[in-house]
Length: 317
Image 1 (cartoon, rainbow, N blue to C red):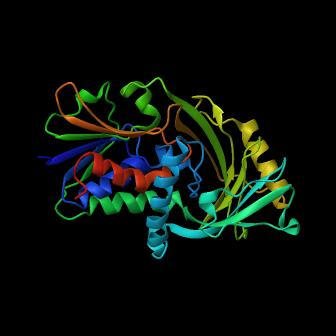
Image 2 (cartoon, rainbow, N blue to C red; image 1 turned 45 degrees about the horizontal axis):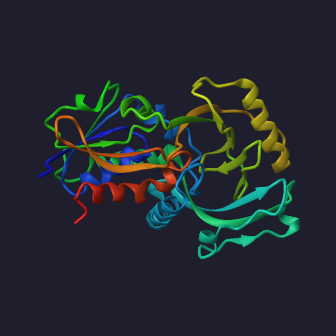
Image 3 (tube, one colour; image 1 turned 120 degrees about the vertical axis):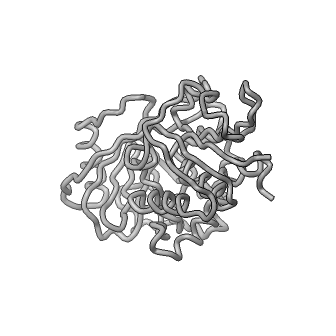
């Protein structure tokens, strides 16, 4: 019988899993090398949209389940979740509207709504302001009644068996760290760099997946300009890339180049064989559930995958 749960990783996947376990009164502790603003999740634009993750069928199912939860959270301003119109564009041709987006109200954009693109569609989606939402998840986890939850930062495990044996169940939400921790050679780092600029009166989010990747995501107190999606484990900010991002977004939005408040780099944990969401056994016989490899869809899949983790652990009832 499971009495205590150890979660490895303090990004959005780890925090969301922690909330679900703690609110079911399981003693839950998070262990992570990086927490808060140092996580990959903190560098994310965090707009709901399935991106850079496989396999498609499972990803869409988990994403739609997460969508429902986030829509509910958007009714409470304290969560940092709001609804926003996402405008997705293509520079090269007619962009198709995904089948799953049609029931959510996706509509094609008319020509006069296209700034410098050939085609586009609009869709209302949840937006998670990471400066608020990650703290919301953290506080919701720590304040869960009877769970005694805690977060231990600056903890690096060489292998998962090193997790204290007093924990009956281990959840691996280590993101790109699972490449060496699992270990898993299928994981590769898809590097994302963004620039944070002052708040813009934009009214909608703009995304273009054509190369070079471009997006502008307005938040409560600032705006996220992006971005990159390159195979690299380089953590340092590249000033040349920042300049390109700001210039590209400003050109599309037809504004003067804004001042850059901050720059962020995160390594999206893309897994070539698809998201790993499955139970296994550690060498000491304890159950472990792997939940990593979400690529650029960590926030988008967070609640759907966390609920699946509960199910795989036999605790969803």
